[in-house]
Image 1 (cartoon, rainbow, N blue to C red):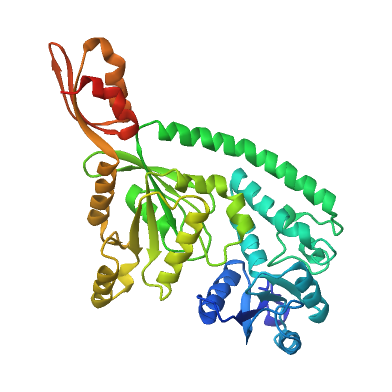
Image 2 (cartoon, rainbow, N blue to C red):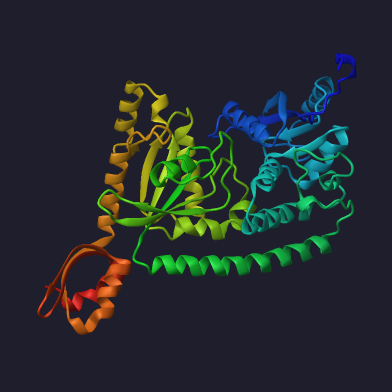
Length: 427
């Protein structure tokens, strides 16, 4: 086939122009925020072709950025043949409408819409899809005055920011229909949450120690889960590859068994609607016995990432759960940098999930936490209390077992909530 007769069949990536603002009280550097936004754009399948920034005392009520900057963005989008302009801050419906009027021929979306779009791309389970759809509809509701018609796929086509409404193609969506959809999603999600709550209650009464992984997105939680449990959870060098919680069995070197659950990653400026929608998934973190807070130690912004995760943990009521800081990806750091981390975070575990470095130290730290949450008992259970011996086998860690004339002698480690069942037979 001659070159002249060949045709390009690969789908062309959308071209994105990023817009960010710097405010006096911002703790997150603008350059870092835009870098993260670029990663989000790449995860959504688009290519960043340029950026525009503005330093402001406060956001402009009408269009977020100043009138001159809006004109500059419009000209830049045209010059770079951009398909979509992504604002790093969440836009109000009025700002969205005004910007669409001033910057013609391209989609205008904000960071929140982009994150929702990525969640729609990565949601695989029924619960995950319900949670994303609910967050999307809650976000869409105040923006229905014709301004988000492109999200239905008619005016501007598909691509980044268009995976709203689970692929619905209708252009005219009124508030009553969206509210009805929100009510239906909320009711359906409530049923799923009831099932999940039953599973959590079963695990809570099992006497098995429960670990939960939490951390900034792409910190390596899924890789750590695979490393500790030989699981086959998919891992990618992308943001938000894990949305649905995954629970695996973990056996410590001393033979003790526990569960470990991977959860959705957090991020700066995480949309509140997503936190609300994913409350049932994040309950796995709130009800855990120990949170492994996984941090990308090689990131220059790891301190900001830690603060962002703590903020979300507080928002979901998990701030009181014991935490173990796991500084991951230390294989990317020099020995001097690793020693600096040990000085700054003396209680943390330095770890490399990719190379399984620091596994023994991590196991030891988990063991200490599990010991603190349990009691070591030596009991003599009468033979007519066989159900209690069975309970010990099912829900405790038995260190030794001996049959005597007057009963079964057990030395066991038992969760504090079950210890009362055995204490009448203490030796």
